[in-house]
Length: 336
Image (tube, rainbow, N blue to C red):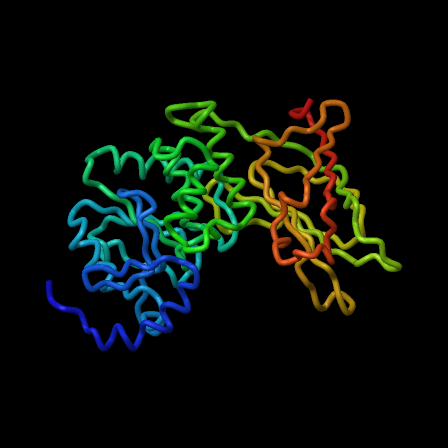
């Protein structure tokens, strides 16, 4: 193996380490890559970059060299970036590339989730030498979520909690690897499918339709003037990203509506400011209607604060109290 440029590595070590943040780096055999093995056959890494990004992300040429040296003819690369400029020709990795686009800090459709797991499992099961390399932009959230699902699919982890714990231990130094609430929820969704429909989860899954009648914010902060909120509802089609806006309106703590939903759904709330010109994140919730369990008498579903994204930085509960909840009332022929 030809020695790599020690001077180049030293010069670029600081910016690359800063971008890596809490993630473990692979620093063996002359390599210094934002890359880690969460299992001997499952690699999670940052985006293999060219151009200016080469200076602070994984250099694509070094990722190619790493895979060719360690897993020649036995690797398959999965790209979860949905950003237009984060694709590349399959020829970059000997034609062994498949892209499953997922929006940053969000989730895939159930169909995409299952298709990926089956394709990756088929590759791994074909030969014990086969490995997969998964990446998004940072190689943390989207790729980590899908890696956890694959750990479950292959039987390398016994539960969603085990898979997430393993990923958090192997990929990052502070165990804060998979932190987006909805992404962790999706790992638990996949675990539930594995438990109920083994060995190939989700083959006959039917995502029911509901109609949202009302959304109510419960246990909010007591204030002289309630914050004006913008509600937006999105869905995902079976191919996943991009999500589709199906409803939006402005209100306060109660929203009356008649909106049909199906499959993967996101409820997003922003705080309106200055005549609606400026907005700040309030909270959002992802769910799939297959896993929705409304009360049979009232159609009521309650989401706790712990099920919401965008709440992690509100550690002192100044914006959303610990007891904060979102109540959703649904109806339709499928729910009773």
